[in-house]
Image (cartoon, rainbow, N blue to C red; front, side, top):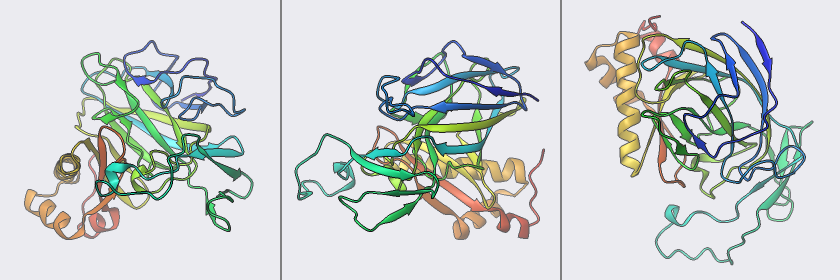
Length: 307
């Protein structure tokens, strides 16, 4: 196990089979930085092309098709004192023809960030409101199958621009390996974001990041899986919304049966009354729905994860 400090000098606006920037091993930890969705770095300077530029990719020694890549977010924290957001709820989230009541503004809305207090404010449009920071990574993933490079505007089985505000510090994520070395990319940090990223942004900001990696050899999964202290969950990415619900729900059933030893009937009965759904991105080409179940319920059933 080794710790690596990595300073990026190039970024990608897609997640693909790019030349790796650093080779690491299972068990290693990396500390690095990300720029914001417009490519602005911690000094507010244009360091990359806008469109969710990614730091990486990182090559994980021994990873190959059919494995499961594991990443744990050890630290996610903004590294400058301002972020920015869009102004207007996306038209696809509102009724057709809905009048927002104000003229579209192209320049982003600037939010002061108090890093010491851990808060965000917007005195012009939300005077008096103080939001606690809840930093999350909006876009990350590993190389998709068949040599593809998929835009950081969207998401699929490899991860991508899921914009799920549950991808916070302390979370572990599992992704299906399709390329030698897995090729892990990450970026698009948000200081705060509501469910769905319905204005097309969170509070976009550059980050200091530390992550740890691992590898589960010979285990194939279908969709991004994750866990925190209280839940296990799956992210389904597709459009329309019912399709990503289907992907997430089916993968969680498979996970409960294969790894927790639940019978099909038990898994269906459990989720029927105890499932929880969180909305990820509903702005971009592929939507994200997260299907989750509480670990405490699995404990009551005596279900322990194998391996």
